[in-house]
Image: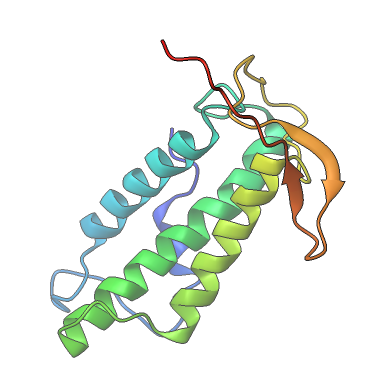
Length: 147
C-alpha cells in the first residue's frame, strides 16, 4: 500500500496537468515516483520502525512526507525537462526540505510515530543533550580493537 496516492501529490502541483497529451510527466510517472519515494521513506526509517509503517496516526505523518517528497521529485523532473538540467525550482526545494526535516525529526526522536512498531535496532546513540547550534548531540564512540 502506498503512503500517498496520485491525487495527494497533484494537489500540491497547482496549475500543472499530467496526461499522455502533455508529454512532460505522465500519470504513470507520478505513480512510479510515489513508489520510489515510499521505498526511500522505508529505507530511512527501517532502523527505527518496522516497515512499511502501520498505525493510523503514524500513516498520517508518513503520508505528508510521501506527498511532499513525490511532488518535489515531479517538480525536479519538470524543471529538468524545461531547462535541460537537474536544477530545482524554489517550490520543489521547499517541498523536499519539508519531507527531509520531518524524516530527520523522526530519526532523532523529536517526532515519534506513536502507533508504529519500533525496531530493536538503532544506529544512533543519543546523549539527550543539544549542542550550541541546537542539534542533538550523539555520543562519540571509538572502537580501538582490531577484529
